[in-house]
Picture 1: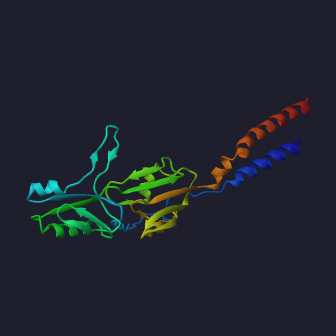
Picture 2 (picture 1 turned 90 degrees about the horizontal axis):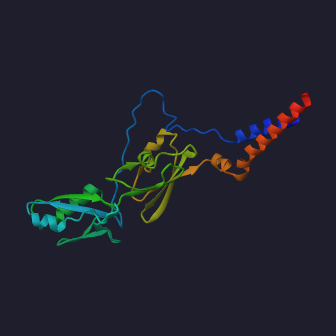
Picture 3 (picture 1 turned 30 degrees about the horizontal axis):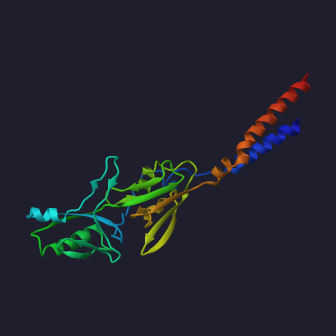
Amino acid sequence: MKKVILFIAIYTGIITGCAPRRDLVYFSNMAKQTSEVKLQGQEVKIQQNDLLSVSINSLNQESNVLFAVNTRNASADNNYKVEGYRVSKDGMINLPVVGNVRLEGLTIEQAQATISKELDKYVKKPVVDVQLVNFKVTVIGEVNRPSTFTVQGDNINLLEALGMAGDMTVYGKRENILVIRQQNGQRVMKRLNLNNQDVMDSPFFYLKQNDVVYVEPDKSKAIEYSPNTRIMPVVIASISAVAVLITAVLRR
């Protein structure tokens, strides 16, 4: 009987010991006292296949209507059909009257200045506003609401993206977040450690359009969801019940 009880105790200790201790605190290496960390946001640059909303204001109202292409609601089920100027494979958009304007590799501010310069030939004192319509990021893996999210504006960091996805589950490996990015026609992958405050200095901390964030599950989740692991509590409970009955019988 003592051997049975000893076996149960040892097995339980092994099972609980298999789950590694995890640091669930973001930036856990940061000093407890208040500190200032300057976040250096990286400007998003226009890429091929981006969709741009270009609105133009000038003293001529007809010109304003001619050039403006924006997002509009296309259906009754709250799904939006996005329209705008598509950046071609040559890195250009085609504006009415003006023709092709190269914008690839420019920031939003630089694109506005470039278009404004071209419009000066046709429009009096143009004021140009350019927005990136299809800025989206995808967050998958061990988060509460994995999905693809459309970003308003052109600035989002990794923490904000995880917040949109409902934050990581307890199984998410905060020390090993994978960011997948299309850059200069190539796929670039970078792993980030959110337990370390130095991650804020990484060029991947601020996300760019079409980035994919993957939160890897911890090994303890695989152990928990293993068929053998799910059965073992029942087996242990059964053995414990038998041991109690045998002990009761022997005491009579």
